[in-house]
Image 1 (cartoon, rainbow, N blue to C red):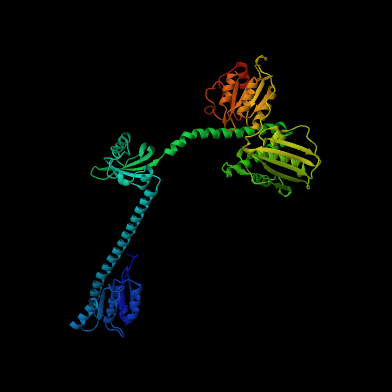
Image 2: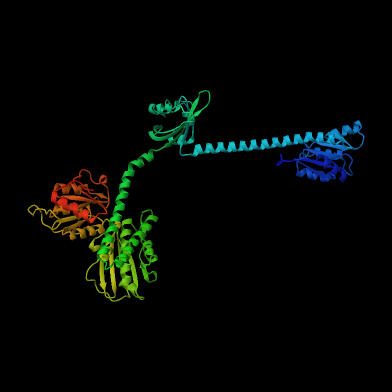
Length: 609
């Protein structure tokens, strides 16, 4: 074995003798070391393992017999075979002394090469066999260590895994029951081992029939199966489980069934609510798209050129996108107002060197955060174009205070050009007021000559806004017949998103309709419907998380035609109102006008998607 050579040692005080022996012993797979003294020989034997040592009997200081006795007294060298090399005549006393010192043989000088090689060959083979046995021993030890490690890992995995590991024999008797199975089913192993799974109450008859079918399957390779089975928990009764089974052969026609069991009760419950969550997600996405649609349309209405539109629309979308990023980092929980202001500074909308902020630490709900992001963007953009930030000496003071459950935010500009009130309110003014949820009294501007001051009042969660006055309209009991077109029709908007309501209002007024009012809560919608003077109602599918079933019932009771405008699908809208069309957000203006015209002309048409 070239990678594990055999070593011989020659100990002789004469260099010529060593050279002669080395020449006779030379062969592949053999290393011959030499020493000219006992001390040198012992040092070599401490460093290497030798299959044979040739010791010269006659050496100065320590002779061969004494060296052999030293070797036998040391654990490391005790097992090295010794052949004495001598030129002296051997009497019985010397021969006995040599064997007593540990010799296995003698070689006499002059050395017969055939005899030397024959004896050396025996020990070379013995040494090689010893090396091979050592190698096999090391391999077996490695295999045993690996086996023990794997078994320990498997046991730890089975005991700590969230899965239950169970082994059943061909009669469905429990042969193994892991710690995971004890935790999952509340049953200790001692209560089940040796019992049939059915008799122990863990497996019902239907499950037993299924597992028996797995055992009876005829396949060449080890069959593997999976199924959902109801298994019994000691405390709570049957639980839904996913079971993976492998049929293992144990020889002589015997089989066992290895099972891995996962409790999927929570998954089943999650699947039941997933449809509701998907519907809610669909609603949120479509509401966002409807807001983007409203921003795009109104930005286009009030832009003098495509370049102006690109700047205004892009800036507003970026403000929304950055607010979404803040909320995503907060996992769509409340986010700090200071973080929103810092974001406006980092984006370049506000100049941090010329902004002074003051107010207590507050957090904003997701809806309020998104609206206020647009508000601060509009305020900063207007200040950069016309106000304090348009000149180097201009300054902005942004302060806020808590007034009970409300937050009052003040934007004050100083050091800018002289201010004059605008002749009309544009879309930017509407966006500034959007932070207050669309209520006109929630965002007020004081156009002072030295700089505009905006006061914006936010209620907690944007859910406690002051209700707008109900429209002053007359009852319709003796009024004129409803028109068959949008021209001249009276429409009530029931919508809690200010921008979407604004977009709907502009579209309907462009079509010749009159908007009698905008209701943002269920109570406002019912009051406005009962006040009368309405030809048609656009009803949001959800008002600040509150269902609109009661509003739909009131409208049906008053025979007022209505359609749903919602990001929800039909399955998430009030049931029993399939006669009401559905306009999905974001809506197309032509579809909006077409559905409403048909609704007015034909009374209550089939639902439209």
